[in-house]
Length: 423
Ligand SMILES: [Zn+2]
Image 1 (tube, rainbow, N blue to C red):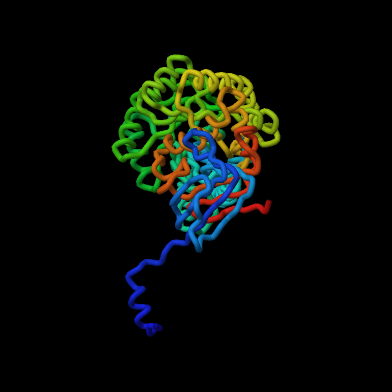
Image 2 (cartoon, helix red, strand yellow):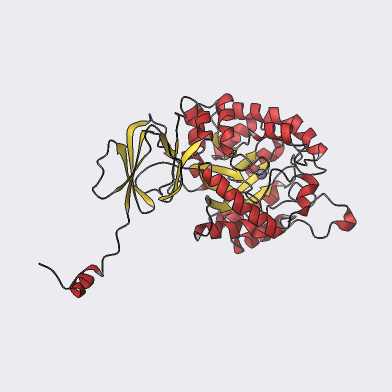
């Protein structure tokens, strides 16, 4: 019987349109939970979420099939420490010539490169003028290709510290960096201000750094009192804090203050590792970029003192990584992309394996554990029903050679195909 058109329309009206079903097939699947890979894997995607994952799953009639052949599927990768608005070729005094609009546009270029490299989620830790908030929002609106972003806005720090502008002489200095806040109450106010303008988390500078002028890399900067106020205020608002800390004392004081993730972690001692384990603090150690800084740094404009600092600290950071991992600390993948070229993020996996992780553990640092470090474990990080359909594929088996992750052939973010190289 043929119904009149109007009847069909009325009957259909209360039903929302069904999200399209997509079946992604591949020879192998690593789900991020740490078990043996699935063979002959199928991921069933409905709209933006995963509906089912399994070996040889029956594919419902009408589903669109994406057959990736002999590839390995993995959860979309997570980099917990990037600077999308920063450029690898513009360090030192060169960076002073970059306007806020230009760095925001650079961020759009870098967001695309990062997504194409298989990183579907990043945490952007430090950007002037809330350019990271604008970038995140435009990506979320579908206006630009890019990873899911958690953003901090301007990083908070002390006057003259790693997060201040120290490049110009007194008479030319103008205003201090946007994130400068001295004393617990000013620091607390700065936390509130960053959240007011759209930050998802707070980034602080607990110790000196490699790229900053005039400070010793391990020198303590924020005090326990300041960091405790920052962490308490962020936690009151249900948000997290990431602390840049190279120095032994600052690492421990940041952990004791309740900071959620420690970045760089170069000079951690055994007591610091014990404290991190006790508190459940995540360590985010950028152990690839030493090679880039030392080989390309001079061309990229790094200050001579920055190169000197990197020479003193790079190897020690890798040894600290090895010790911390062996001792059982929680470690999430974070690279400091922007110091080195965006899109090369996956080069760090080989170093994590060289310094003590198995390929599976390194993959988990950038998937399940990375999601936990960011508080996104209910949404991303593993391939499971109900999670967002963020998945990538690589041609070779990354458990046999983790460098396979440097060549990502397929990227899906929230159910949308963002990259698909023909085999
Ligand atoms: Zn950084």
